[in-house]
Image 1 (cartoon, rainbow, N blue to C red):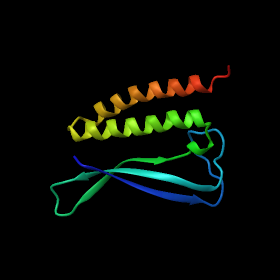
Image 2: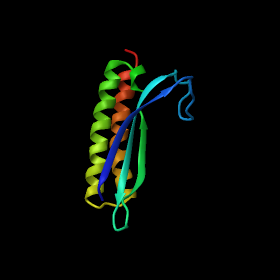
Image 3: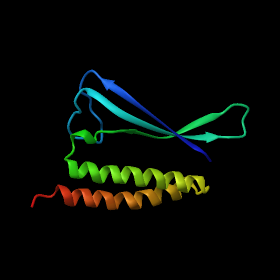
Length: 114
């Protein structure tokens, strides 16, 4: 199935908390990317949201930002390629998760002192 990606910016006027992060995020403008899958065969075009990404990398060190950008680019492309081939969603998520662990390991090594 075909995918579309929408990029936008959202501005928070106050700090906000995310359950996955320990510290509150500062107010400001953040980039948001939404991936939607097109469902065909209906009278109208219908989109199902598959992923929404809120970019927080501006606060990370430059080396970590570079690794994160490589991960974002590669994993997004991998998801889209597997989806276009008609793979099951569970197979796609497992494949992307395996690669994500490698990027996480690389960032953890970069963040270690010394």
